[in-house]
Length: 262
Image 1 (cartoon, one colour):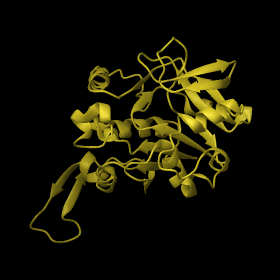
Image 2 (spheres, one colour; image 1 turned 90 degrees about the horizontal axis):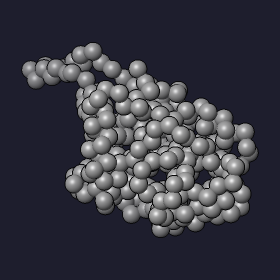
Image 3 (tube, one colour; image 1 turned 180 degrees about the vertical axis):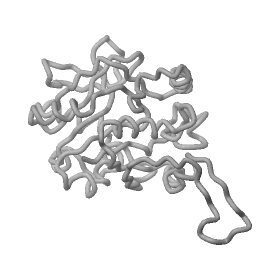
């Protein structure tokens, strides 16, 4: 199953970093937060990623094109022009298949998904998440829940501090989707979606200003096609310099809750 990750936003509330590199490349420890997100999925056996690029997308392409050199000790023999002039020491590799899709610098989330349609639609079901949030979520349980209810979309609801897309729910059905209201203590949209490919024909299009969290999810909720997977464990997003510092401090403890891999 493919995992699409939103990597194209401009991170306007995080300009200290995003003026230089795209927000998903902001380091938590010595790896980009994007790497952490991919490790979460990979720990559960999901290794086929579709990165929805936009703003400063070349930084992300370059990171993965040069992944081995950037994540391992290397020796470069400048006096050797042969194919073995670079030696990797204790080379580590991830079992990842990565498709980088240029979805446009100014494109919103709904249209970004649409523009990656040909990579996501064939399998009939796919995961989607944001490139700035980590969690200790049980991905297989999320997918099993999605398959069990037969609706088009599932989003993961969490109870983090701050403000995000708040959900009005009845049982396990999302009946209303409000983007970033004043927080009233309910479940919030934390991403970690699962969608059926039928969403493309019913809720998405190529309009550059189409925001997934507005009309598409709101319509999906009204139509009774959006369900919530309630996650009461750890979740934290990185939208500001303060949150960037929080996540780095948690990582430094050596006990980051989202580190579910060995």
